[in-house]
Length: 386
Image (tube, rainbow, N blue to C red; front, side, top):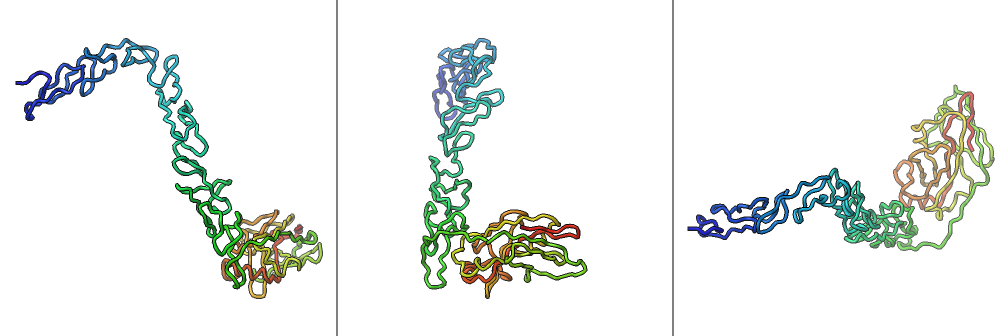
């Protein structure tokens, strides 16, 4: 025999029906509650859609709602769906945004100014250092659960853009090769002169084999200027004469005169100028500095990129070594700036220069040639270069 309100006799014992007040009894075999009218849920403890006012007697039918409203399951009044408001429930309330025909919660994260968002996109307004639709992730240059700003020292850090550097989750910055410190603000032992322009950050000490440690000198750079501009006129030589000019024997002129006229051989090659004696000798203090010169040309026809790529922009001569600087992209009519750093120079016939090779060359410079033409004269038109 089984009392009403219990089930499960076949399973070894009767259990009480776990039904809410919206059910009078449950199935004697499965225990499923038999809900009253308008009541739903596994335990008959909630109102079905279209009903409201859950209680011992069940739920009451909702009135017919219009103008986009729905029946409140608690009060039975016609109200706008969650997050909507206004005439026809066509506006989203504060803290919600429109996605199709429904209003979704903004769900702004810890980096948001408030829990309001753009009503059309759902984008929350983020504090400094935060980003994402809900402001839940760090912007570039910020780190950690509170998105603190990375305190990297820009000159010594890799990958900084417009003064903004990235760091890891603990605020450690990625340092250049010769830089150390959590913030990349110190030179590695045996190096000096932390600089943003140096790809390695600091420059390796080079004391001609005498010591391995050094410190930055207090010297100030001063520019050495050419005496006067040089005007060059290129005219075409007899086209029946063919002259072989290779990259070893460059066509160069001296700067003793402010004007020079040259008959260019065929096929045409660039013309070089040899800088005067004030630019040679011991130029060790020029390391890290730049050689700057401006060239303006008109007339004739441009030499091909293939031809220009074979001829260096600058060549340095010593008794034991020749160094060359090649442009990545040739500049036609403009200012050239050639930096004295080993990573930018080639040892002729060997490859990229070492620090010692460049320093030894600067210690005893015999000659400097700079390329001043990229055009060739024609029968009808000379080339003028300044």
